[in-house]
Image 1 (tube, rainbow, N blue to C red):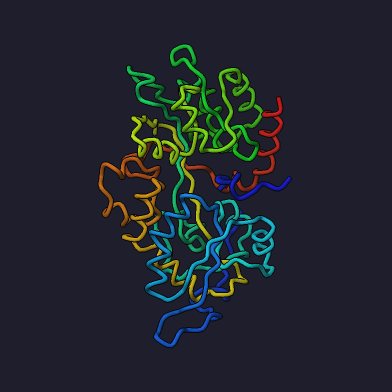
Image 2 (cartoon, rainbow, N blue to C red):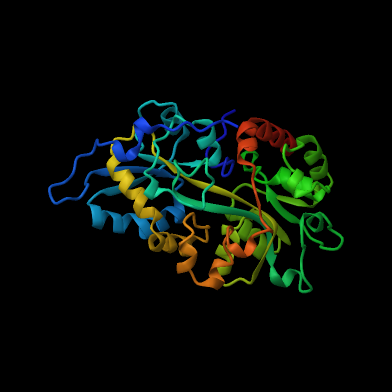
Length: 353
């Protein structure tokens, strides 16, 4: 069973091999326009929706004006992206990946110029990810649900007597997200001892709360479940809580023991307009441009200078805010990349009951 990029969100050692011969700054396949611009077209593959719309506004429109290169967005397809990671020809000039793809396909992407690399990314990802952002995964609730204060950690999340009500929980096999880590923390495992994940122990702990879970099939359902009162607490990517806040809801997000993982895009070796994508990588790493994207989406930045641009109160809502240092837990991306099939298979079996 092939796990899609969307499911591996989330899925962000294997030594990363420098592909200097394929470095973007040395490639030239697009041809400059007469007025000094780059020109041509970039085929950009992501998951569409509001996040793509935010990229269009924050990045693509201004880039087209500045460089004369149009960005055409398409919905990413595994049947195209995976062969391109293997070095085959394909339609994309850049496409979305999780950390796992970078770690598992070190020869399947071009290296970025150093000036386009983002300083908040881990060392093993920094040379390859452009247009990056940080996802957070946490528990959140409408503040009025627990007027005296809600759960403080994952042990509390499993305490349905003290904090009554159903919990919105990932219900699609590929959306296992942080389920194993959450269950193990609730079962008494210390954060520093999480990896390697004991999947059997995690599933046994999940069984203890199964009757109190309401399963969602898409992240957008999280907002509906909370607002309707169908769930008291939700576990989700934190962008869903930001969306509720933007809609006027008073939402509490518990950042203690929340999880973070970086996402981004890569340039495959067979990109047909590598000069333009190299310029776009620089454009997307610009602090002002990236701040516009962050403000629209609530995703965390990958350039530390963005925090100097953002309103401090808003910055505290981001997954990788400095305010959350010591609270949030980064995934062990290498372990998860090495064991993603076992994680998927175990979660699929557990959901099936």
